[in-house]
Length: 259
Length: 267
Image (tube, each protein chain N blue to C red):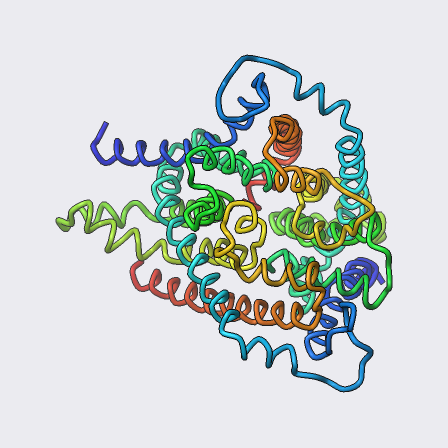
């Protein structure tokens, strides 16, 4: 191996270690038979068992799942529309409206929605406000994925369909929809992950009544560090990995274009 | 028909739940705080919140600290991301996909889990609640945002340029600084925007890993909206953060364009 290649590999391995060691420690200690995280005592599944008996945690998980399912369904439909519109009709203001929420610091979207829900709508914060907020920040991600998929396509397919007398609706159903399906699946999984993971925006629009998994984790971390957090973190990692696995199986090209 | 059928629903949704809330924040910055929090009944536009912000040096200090933390985190991200991005860009196609996936995976775990991991590691080491912990957390959470754009940039470089430099007698060091690095500036700029801007508004990392002296703009905003319930002040702070972000975004776009012109000159 050349000396420069050796240095490059060493430096890169160090950075990979930096990325992985902290998470490996969390996973490892979720099986540690001790109240304290400081040292390894022995193997146990107790912390996972404890999670199953933790009603608050289970309710938070159920909320997270339901909100993620609903918000990613809505944002997949709206995001796909936005992606199609950005690709086909060149409104200059549309990308700005769709993509700015993605580019801004999350806290700004969080506080502006808090102010809007409480001040303008006088809405009680909870399930609905979280659902709307998650949909708002996911639309842009879906739109980008759908637009990227469309950009890689040969326009003549759509022209051919029209020339053969297909109505716009038929063209959409028989040509466009099957072609963008991988992007829709990827977009759905992406917004699902974003919704399950979101802490910052949810923190502002959740109010006191409804809690989600990240909010629950946050309050646990703030109070004390317990192995139960390791266990729920490990489960959450496993869930995300599964989702990514499916996303990459369904739509490898689309994910690559986004990255 | 089809045009408005696909354009209107997302547009209306975002006008209602993105643009309208943003405008309300702007308006709230010119209101007065209510007696029990929130906003007082509207009488006349007020600049009280802004005068308060400008009148107290603590706010300028927190803004300065936020920019410092964001700048330092970005710089460390560049240094850590460079070798990895380069390795990925130079790898054969098949291995490249695997190496990219290995960068994305940890980043796909929950944001709080990633912060929590550092509480576990830094706590026993006695480094928790220090500025060091804040920087480590910021870098850890945002590093992939630097690696990916940089890798995409480096991948596009024409190896012939480096060969030419070598033929002309340039050392490895010179080849890097005179060829690769200048060509990679657009990648560094877009990565920097993706790191700097979120760090600027972050409140969770300083809150969970930092001490009381490490609070940033994000913490200040959160405090005004949720704890003090001084909505006009919180709004004014959000507007200042937005202005800073927009200025930075504009600057990055300009710098990236200049970087690209540089690229054209070289190639």
